[in-house]
Length: 493
Image (cartoon, rainbow, N blue to C red):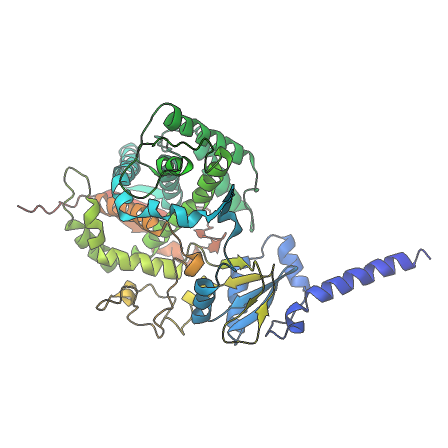
C-alpha cells in the first residue's frame, strides 16, 4: 500500500507537467518541442540561463507567424510577425492592457498611463528642461573634478557613471528632491542604484523583490515631498508636481503648476499608489536612460566619423553661457538617428510581454488565445532580423535617414514598420520623449566637453547581457579614457 503512494504522486506530477507542456499542441498552434532538458536544469542551477537570449533563439528557429513556447511551466505565445503584433496590441480593445496601470476610484475606472501621458508633452518638458540641464552639469562637473585629481587622461567606467546620472534625473524629476548622487553617497537613491548594480553583476535573473525595504523607504520619500507641496505650498517644476496635481483632481496638461483647490475631499491617488507609480517610473526610466546612453557611446566611439558628425551637429547649437535651448534639440537629426539605431540594436525593453485578460481571437487566423495566457513580442529578435534590417548587427544610423514625411522610415529595411523600439499600441512608451530628452542632454554635454577614447582591444571581451535591459556584464563595465575639450558655440548675430 505504501509503495503505491510515491507511484501515485509521481504519476500526478508527470501528468500535470505533460498537460502543461502539451497546451499549444492541444490547441493546434505551431509549437516548439516541449520538455525540460538536463542542460537547461544545469544552466538554471548555475544561474547561467539567459531568458532573453532563449526567446531570441526560439524566434530564429520558428517559421510561422505564431509559435507556442514554454517559459518554465508557463505557456507563452510568441508573435514572430511585426504586422500581426501591431494589429493585436493596437486593436485588441483592452484584451492585453497591463493591469498595474488600471485604477478604480469609487465609480471611476481609468488607465493611469493615458491620464498621465500629457506630463511628457513638449510644453511640460520644456519647463522641466532647467532641472535636466542642472543634472547634466553635475555629471560634467564630477568628471572634471576627477580629471583634476587624476591628471589629464582620466579613465572611467561610463556605464557606472551614467547610472548615477540616470538616478539623479529620477531623483530630481520623479521624486522631486534636489539631489546630486555624485556627492551624496548615503542617499536612499544611491543605495537603490548600488543594490541594483550589484544584483546585475551577481544574478542571471536577479530582481528587486516586489516589496523590498526600498519600496517602503521610497514611499516615505514620496510622502515627505507630497506633504511639502500640499501642506506648505511648495511649487517645483517636475514630474512629481504633476503627479500631485493629478492626485488632487487637477489637469496635468496645460501650463499651471500650482495646486488648485478641489471640493472633493478624497484624493484620486493615495500616497501608496502614487509611490507605486513613481517606483514603476523609476525602474523603467533607470534602465532605459542609462543603457541607451551607454550603448550609444559604446558604438559611436568605435566609429570616429560618427563622433565627428555628432560634434559638428552639436557645434551648431547656440549654447549661451553653457546652457542649451530646448527648442534646438529637435534639430539634432543625426543624433536622433543614432538614438534610434541604438534602440534598434539594444532595445531597453527587449521583450513586450502581456497577459491576455479575456479570450481573444487572433486576427486573420483560426486561433484563440485563452484568458490568463501570455503573449510575447520579441523586440530584440525582430530588430536583429535580416528580414527587416540589412546587416542587423552593424551600427548604421543612416538606415534611419528620413525621406519626406515618413518620420520613422528606415532607408534600407525591407519592411517599413520593422522598428518598434519604443513599443507599439498599448505597449507604447508614454515617456519616450522624456527619455530622449535626458539622453540627448547627457550626450551633448559629454561630446562638448571631452574627447573620449574606447580601448578597442577590450571590445572582443565585453559581455553584453539583458536583465531585461542590456548591460555590459564585464567587471570593468565600459572603460573610456577622457580628455577635456571644448566646442565653441555658434553665435548668430
